Each structure stands twice: as C-alpha cells, then as structure tokens.
Amino acid sequence: MWPSMEYEAPFYEDAETLEMGLTLHEYNRHMFPGVGTIINIVTIVSGASLGVLVGNRMKKPTRTLLTDVLGLVTLLGAGSALIPLWSDRYINSLPKGWSLLVVLGSLLIGGLIGSALKLENRLDSLGETLRIRFKASNESTFVEGFVTASLLFAIGPLAILGSISDGMGTGIDQLILKSTLDFFAAMAFATSLGWGVAVSAIPVGFYQGVWTVIGLGLGEILTGYQVDAMTVVGGIMLICIALKLLNIKTVAVGNLLPALAIAPILALLVHSF
Image (cartoon, rainbow, N blue to C red; front, top):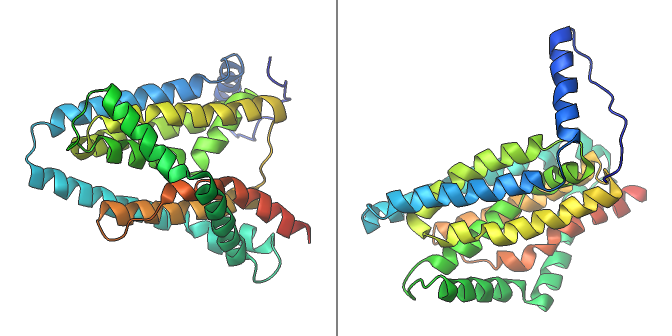
C-alpha cells in the first residue's frame, strides 16, 4: 500500500464542483500505482502507430518538412519551459545572482556525470539493438526516432511530478495530460522518424516507473523552486533536441540527462545558504 494522505479539498463556491473534486480524488486514491505510466505507454505506442501508417504514404520532402516543423515546435516548447527562470518564486528562493548559476551548474555537473557514464552512447546502442530486434533497415530513422522520442518524452516536470503523484496515490491528472500531449507528439514524430518512436515507450516506462516508486516511498519531495530549476534545465535540453531536428547542431543530450536530477538538489543546497 502507498502512503495514506489526508486530502484537503480546495475551496469552491459551487458545492457540485467540490463534490466532483472529492469524487475524483477518491477514484484516484483507489487506483494502483503505475496506472498513469501504463496509460502513457499505450498513448505513445498508439500515436506512433498512427503516425507510421500516415507517414508511409508521404514523400521524403514532406517528411523532411514535418521534421523541421517538429523542430520549430520543440523550440517553442523550450521557450515556454524557460519562463520559470524569471519567475518571482524561483528568483526569491535563491541568493541574488544564483538563479542562472544553478542552471549552469546543473548542466555542467550533469554533463560530466552523463559523459562519464556514456549515456548518449548507451542510448544509441540500445536503439541499435532494438532496431536489429525489430528488423529495421540500416538506412531507416529507427535509432534517431528512438533516441529523440525517448529524450523528448522523458524530459520535463510532468514525467517526474506526474509519476510521483501517481506513486503517492494522489492522482494521475498530470500523467493524463502528458499522455494526451505525447499521443499527438508521437504521431507527428513517427510520420518522419518511424517505429523507433513507438519503441521509445520502453525507456519512458522504466524512467517514470522509477519515479513512481520514489513517490510510493517518499511522498511529495519537490518544492516549487526546485520544480522551476528542473523545468528550466529541461527547457535547455529541449533546445538541444530542436537544434538536432533542424540539422543545425548535434548535442549529446543523453549525456545531459543527469542534470534533471541535479537541478532540484543543487537548488535546495543553494536555497539553504
């Protein structure tokens, strides 16, 4: 059983809305931990499958154009993720001048750890192994689709906070939202990058499963400014993904993944001073 938590209902003037909120919480409380991630996996696979069916009928210039569009939209999403860098909650929680340094330090430390662990190479190797297992051709975009989609679906606060909330038994609302976004993203990416996008559901499921277990054991562990730090770091990583999709610059984003874990920890340490 997961930790039992006292539910404090938000204030609603409308009694019917309050009753609906209590009913939703009671429904969420009785769902088993991990159901949100299972839903997420299903939406990624189904969205990618639809995308492949449509993409196979498109000519290469059209698929290239779609990849460029995805790069631009990813860039837009990255810009949105950077907004907390200038929020009062984040700035006021850290010593003056440290808001950007926390992000920089997280990326540097995370990059060093990721490079030492060769995470980018491991992701590529995993993608290549799965490509062979799924009998995709050498000329296919299987590995690129797998790596790009895995990073895109794992980066961001919804993957972590939603999974923690799922583990705590306080609801899967955030993962439902993420699943909806991932469905359309998977469909769009798969039109040009193929079945590798669908297979990315495997590492995404494992990643979110780990956070679900953390939520199961520890409860709510991240404060607002820590989420902001993680969101900004994720935004910078999204920029790197966008640059790759647009064929501007290839950055080893996989090696930066530890920065997502470093950001809230470093923010907490700086906040303590």
